[in-house]
Image (tube, rainbow, N blue to C red):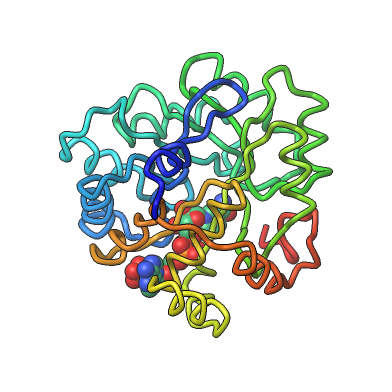
Length: 276
Ligand SMILES: NC(=O)c1ccc[n+]([C@@H]2O[C@H](COP(=O)([O-])OP(=O)(O)OC[C@H]3O[C@@H](n4cnc5c(N)ncnc54)[C@H](OP(=O)(O)O)[C@@H]3O)[C@@H](O)[C@H]2O)c1
């Protein structure tokens, strides 16, 4: 029997700075600015999503903001993340631009999108954005353990989250353990392998045995590995499917079978090959 209380406890996480983050969010990478992005965000909000993950580099912050306003869902009920494009050399000024595009006074989370130009140069500017109230929480993305440690060493305000590529196929065990030790939440991006993990036979077999879908199995694995997960879809039925994660659980054997799909050797790195 599903345990509704356990389910509700899994729906949010407390970050190290005390802020709450919903463990399921909608990612909008590669969703074109305009009707497609607005539609996906509006539908997700209708279906109960309360967390949207965008970025300066995605070019769709304005659509996210418009959909949020048109949804009628109160601003304070929705967790909004945006990311510093490290090509913008002034993180606080870039945050101000994001706020204007989104049409909000503050984002819930502002993260360095990748350690371009080195892991530490942006951090004082991220702290400035936080101090000015542009971002309630600040963090990083695509940072390995050593890059995270370099930021922590110079930080006045520590990063509370590291968003990385993470799925059974990229089970970065050492990175996850190190994040946990440092009170940094790990957020799983590309949890479906940008679609490519959905046809794997192990995933499909577990889904069939449970009467669930491959996407639900992959996303549930992320939840049970105590990460925050941000799948992307622009289709209503898939958005609905991807949100049904809190009324079932994978067994220890199913988790182990999925863990064994890892192709990273349990790495502490954020990427095998960096694209920056
Ligand atoms: N920080 C970073 O550097 C970084 C990098 C990559 C991604 N991200 C974040 O992570 C988010 C998710 O990652 P992602 O966009 O790479 O992809 P993903 O969530 O792993 O997979 C999305 C793909 O799977 C399809 N899909 C989604 N749900 C499905 C379902 N239930 N059944 C069948 N197909 C389904 C989608 O198609 P449809 O849309 O056509 O339904 C899309 O092609 C991004 O949007 C972004 O916010 C961050």
